[in-house]
Amino acid sequence: MLSADSSTVSAKMRSGDRHLTGDSEKNVRTQLSIIVPVFNEAPLIRPFLQHLRDRTPEAEIIVADGGSSDGTVDLATGFCDRLVKSDRSRATQMNTGASAARGDILWFVHVDAEVPLGSLDEIAGIMNDSKVVGGYFRIRLPRGFVYRLTDTFAHYAGILLRMRCGDHGLFCRRTAFLDIGGFPEVPLMEDVQFFRELCRSGRVTYSDKRILVNPRRYESVGRISLTLAYGFIATLYNFGVPLSMLASIYKRICCDRCCRHR
Image (cartoon, one colour):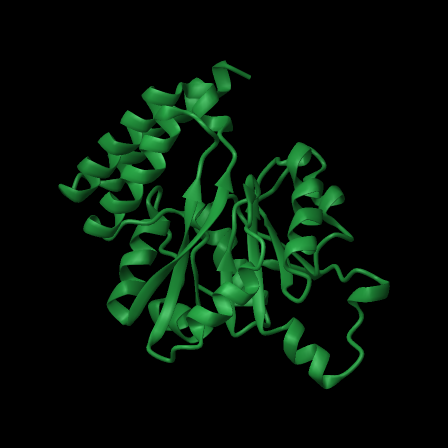
């Protein structure tokens, strides 16, 4: 699954300050790799990468594109350390990005997120415990009662059900990622299944620092409607409903409504 032979991997190194000047700098810069899966994210990609570089200057940043047709690749070029291409599938894209990464720690971040200040130190502190194989951040949606209810309830329900989605910025040791086999190639819930496998492989903990999540999907579908839809899909998943059926429900409730509001 993680073979670079099955994907096109092209290095896009920034000039100037991104050139490595010595072994010590190389070790620091390649200790943690951030993988960002994208598809047609032209309005967000460049501001996000600039934000990510400001907040995580020592990390290796890898953009994993799934065949964008809106100029996302051109906009990302020069603002990340590597650009990798694969078929459109979040699991495939993240696995392809991981195969190109040099870091011992892999951090998977969505393009519509805002990572907290000091996030690299936070991850380093968590991973300093050799028994910990991975972790995640809590999320924060913008102000509003529904959003506060959503991110608070989701946090504690997620702990109880051992469910975490990609919005939480999952990170793990490369060795654990390889042992698990990467993200499963499934139509939906690949991040949840990966998270559960990670929990089986060792201790997983979380940071109280918050990743700020862009509410664009909530605003398109409806705050209450999307919150209930996520809860409904999570319930069906825990009752063993086939992922193909869940993917169909997700597309009908979430994706189709987003398209109609664009």
